[in-house]
Image (cartoon, rainbow, N blue to C red):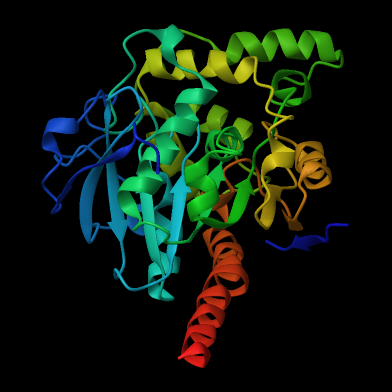
Length: 356
């Protein structure tokens, strides 16, 4: 049985191809979205606590189809590692406040841009996007950013959580994944259970949300109207103004074609058979007012996971929990490190010393 807690307001085709400093990936920049939303480094311009921190170093990972993905490493090399995958229409900057929390408490954080997002190249055709691509890219990042046999906590938000599910059973995830976090995500029935468009009929909701996910219309510039619409669909009951602004800038920066293509993948998603194969200890995080992947998704995941460590319900939060309550999300990740990563390392060292 899993505990429910509520909180208040290496494969042959995947390997590292380069380890560089902060300016070593200029040649990897993909389509980053709207002019004015991104800075000279290709990252979204965000203010205050959401401003992207400068990575300690950058490297690139080559996925199974030969595409190179930019990877950021934050923190000190000897600190325990946390690998994070962002969600649909986001980028590495989405994790900025969580990165700050974790590096300040002695963790190394590894983030990367999902295919077509941020600085990662888009696929050649919309049909190329798939959950298999998500899994391949994550496995490539694990192999590139971690030493052979090195363990890490691996977490994903929304489509990033689906990435972790898609990688279930992959040798790279088994080798490197000491514990997992599935944050604001689901494995199936996304369109029928979403509550962004509040139709009573599940069939009508499913059709309407499928059209919304695959929409080809550009979002255009950030305006008061789009801020309000995105806040309604993705944030909780009383979001802070800077959270609303950060959400709008991040989502607007995603290229329209990429947003539409991945939306089509999400509309037909069914990873329910993969979830029981995630045999590492796994924490589930969910906002109680999530309209995109509502609470039933988290509870279904908890029931399917063989080693669920708990469902953390963030009261009043929406879908963008790492932006809305980064301290709590960081605490969940740090707890997984403490309980399943550093403890294992300490035990291994002690056993080695006793044998000597």
